Image (cartoon, helix red, strand yellow):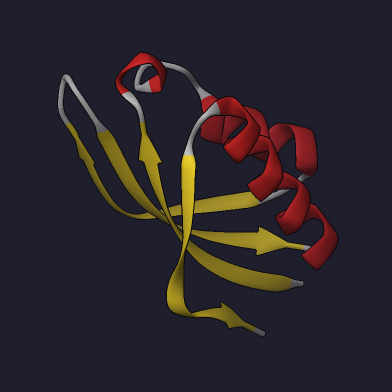
Length: 79
């Protein structure tokens, strides 16, 4: 099982959508919220994600397709 730290930036229109939950269920990824800041205009979340490397990549692509900016956190892979 691999782990990855990512910083997500949600546009205003997606703040209330359950994108993290949906990604976790769809791709069997376990999210652990490390930090979050949500306002009426933007949402920012730092997550530690656990799963297979393949599922982590599929989850990242899913979030990006939804319009969420996904940025790796420096030194992001923990094995």
